[in-house]
Figure 1 (cartoon, rainbow, N blue to C red):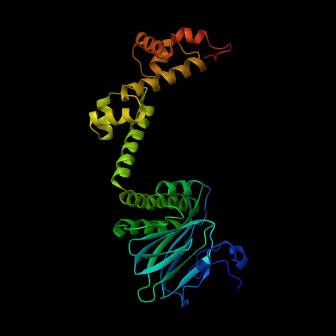
Figure 2 (cartoon, rainbow, N blue to C red):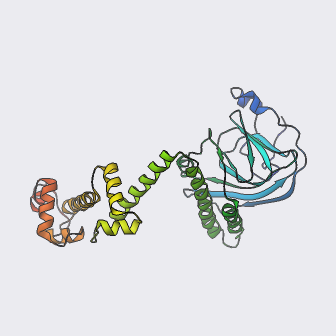
Figure 3 (cartoon, rainbow, N blue to C red):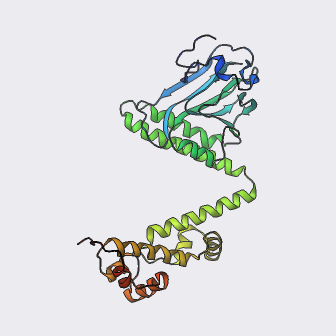
Length: 327
């Protein structure tokens, strides 16, 4: 096999040369050429991130291409995630011995460490956009979308929604006068691209899966809201209006998921935080009560005793001997 350059002919970096003996245990069919490779591209754009950072999700490069008929990449392996979205035409993506025909609105994801190849159709070669990225959050995010090496295809995107996001990503990476800003904006546009794809993936799930996912998101939002606002007066009516749900529906789903009503869960957050303040500070009891959302110190003491089995003052006295911080 001839030695490879550091870039594919579509401009994308190659992780390492592929030697035949590296794949002795892999599917032999995956290594067979998919016909002849002819020419290059009618149009090609490749943009590197001028200063890739080390965040949870970092764009390495992006671009757009309209290759000639039968233009082929691979077999190859990358050490980053590479997603292509097809704008028009079609072609074939191959990985793990499977072949996937992708058309306008379809995206295919190349995973790190996975042998792959892809090739434009002989009659109607595809026109696609792409983004390569890395980061510790990348695989977790894709897993949450149910996009895996076994299920690498996302079908049915609305290109009027998705195409402008790729364009914005390309524009952001070309800000070579401010590389740090280019990296920051690039990661933001990538998240929006993946967000659109996540909506598509959820839309392709079963109704039962969608219902469960929607309920989980509702409960997570409610818990997050209470965790942020427990120091303030919070009513279930207010919580329901803020999150856009009917009070009865939210209360029923919340208790089914957590085993507690929203009111009980909020009380638990407040009392757990009060317990921490009693343990870790020397704040007076009335200040502890106020700090966790109780206007009445006597009511706070009653609820704390009901919850902990001991009054706040007695709880503090029974703590292991330790020097409390002074104000």
